[in-house]
Amino acid sequence: MKYNKYVLPFCMVAMLGMQSCGDFLDTYPTESYGDNVVWADQGTVDAFVVGNYGNAYDQYLGFNYWDRVFVNNMINCRSGCPGEARGLMENTFGWGLNDRFGAIRNCNLIIEKVAESEVLDDSFKKRYTAEAKMMRAMIYYDLARKGGRFMWVDRVLTESDNFEIPLTKNIEESYGYVLKDLRDAIVDLPEEAVAGRLTKNAGLAFLSEVCLTAAAYTNNASGLHVSVGVDLYQEAVDAVDAIKGVSLDPNYGDIFNENGAYSSNEIILAKYWSADNTSMVNTDMQSLTPNVLNSNVELNGCGPLFKVGDMFEGWLEYTPTQNLVDDYLVVDQTTNKAVRWSESSQFVNNTRAITRDEALEKIEHKDPNELTGAHFKAFEVTTPGVNISDLMYNNRDKRFEASIIHDGSVFYGENIAMNNHGNMSRWATVRYAQDHVPLSNYGTRKCMYTNLSPRPFWNVTTPYHKVVFRYGRALLNKAEALLRLNRVSEAVETMNQTRTIHGGLPASTAANLADAWVDYKIERRVELFYEADFYFSLLRWGKYGNEANDGKAPGSVIDELCEPATFIEISKDRSAAYVGNVQFSNDERKFDTRSYLFPITKSVINANPAITDADQNPGWE
Image (cartoon, rainbow, N blue to C red; front, side, top):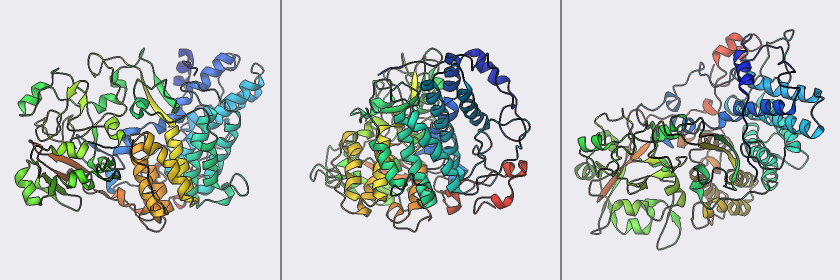
């Protein structure tokens, strides 16, 4: 596989930075960049194209934002549940509707200048045009999946143009533009894999997901079908089948750390940062690493002490929840079936359920209110010498160890204790819920590099990468499309690829649509944790309705978005444990049906005469 580095020349970056905004659109002045600077040489054209990449796919890399602000995969460690998850969003909420026109203008500029170029041969013209169209599709798809409609601009505007641009008339029109750009781009995108660069495989992987969302929000509108007899779901299947030269990586964790950054055959597109200008503080790792120095561990009566006293001195901001952990299935040692941890024979045969009063007596807790509600459960071990953490965490889906730090984990050579008063537990600080310690008694291993030396610390230089598209995600898109086509056996066979290869679980044997959806939803959640997927998948499934959303009508309330966030508390001697509700408003989560789309931001309506209150999305008036 060939790898190149692309650097936007400093002079070009400076030039971009000097541009000012015009009118109410977030765009650059209408004069074009000087031909002598960019468009007179293939090398500078290439640099300009690559320089726009971040504008296109950075919106898909906000992993922590989408996993903690809108869903309960993660929770904040130092603040309460976000208002967005509690139904407190208003129509003033800004989500980028008016902030992307500079990037869109760059795409349009590339398309127009490349077409006029006398220095580029046809192969480069086709490639750069295809890249620009895919970038434009990525930008507009992000707007469509959030708000449904957007202001479509497909040319470089001049000073004489009318900047009062209306919204697309409906969601179908929005997806029509996105799909046309993407379908056009795929034809001329290169097949050769170059790290960090758009390819035909990237276009196909992206298309498979766009088709699913477009179908969900337009009821698979015939006007969006690529041809007669090929609807959006079939197009998604065909797109994944057309992906070439990639495969699932049997080492799931390596896809997201330094071991597989450039060598994993599963990665289709990723963004890369060089160690030449990157430190840990510039990466997600800074906010995934707790601050649990031995001095604090000892001060708070926690332990055991770490071998290296200052090994973990990060700025942890969010941690995984028990809700997420519950979906990492366990292999039952008697039946060899994949089940939830509390249902396995090894757990059932060695524990008993205990009441709230018993749990309050046996297990030290922060707040009795944690032990309430439908999601509370508690157990104690009944077999002498058995460790409840081992019963919960052994024989799990392999992705659990690759993604989650838990009681009994080894991380950076240190033995991690997340039981009551453990060295990396929520007890390891006097500033409860105000410090950089795991509020859920879980940490994140996924997307943490394993070779930061001498320790994971803010100023340690490191390369980094984040995956945008990969084959595992594409396969799950295919499985979802097959479920929508009611081709159950094919769907189960497809999702079993990630389930068995990445998860090491027994294959799903689901034989009907309802059971297949149950297994698929669990599979997608754990496969794509911390990849900015779960929220948008839940919205799609809610739009589908029926088996995809617990038997409800399409467009109904989504129960997963109303679940309180939960955590685990394990007794100091590991003889008992309870699942409790995280406080700090995390038990006030709410979803109403207007939230299938974000509001058309009120400030945009006020600023643009072509948009009125009548254009507001339903429920946000």
